[in-house]
Length: 261
Image 1: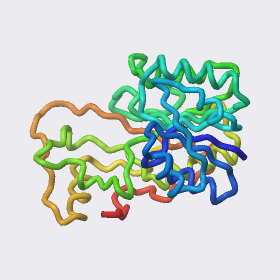
Image 2: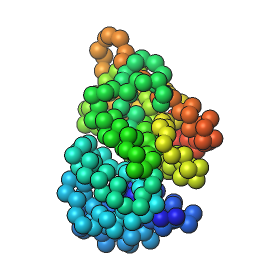
Image 3: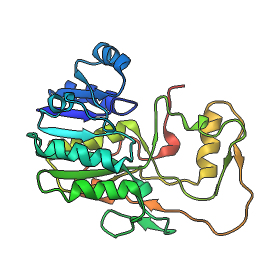
Image 4: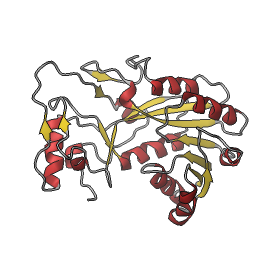
């Protein structure tokens, strides 16, 4: 199957390599001319120069595919609107939009895909709706929680005296291997027109998690806020990916993850 991945960074490039291993033909994008040759060396995919802030004619060749995976951090609604117009004129039938669980409001409890707990003020949520409402193609939204693993060692997240706010609130995190695993499962099962959360099973407190992460690097605990007051948090549910997709997490417990240093 031909698959295009918009975004070739920390998640996009290893995702491309895993999809190639199982027989897919991959188009990768970058906004940097200098990175085009790097991508050619690091992956057997074809690289294209694509920037949604300033789309060029090259985007049509990039979109000559069956599935588009959107994996960029942009919140440029106008840029995404222009990209959608280009998708409408392509042969793409299915889009996988990599989003974030940050679209949910902090309700001091569990948030799932179908309970309407999204913030309507969230630009990311508004962009999700632009894709989901389009009738030219089917979109699945994957809302990933905090990304960890490999070069993203959480022991380095709070350096130089940066204070951890609300240290007794729970964390919502996911390892990159599980991000890739869920994406591949969605493609294999053709689970289109859906919304899924991607989050590990365990939710230790920030104090527990970041103290442990710093200890793995033989570093002292980060600074924790001493402010009193009620906690503001959310617990991201992963029940849907487990029950509907049958996905088994590689790293269900974020306290047991080992990292590249």
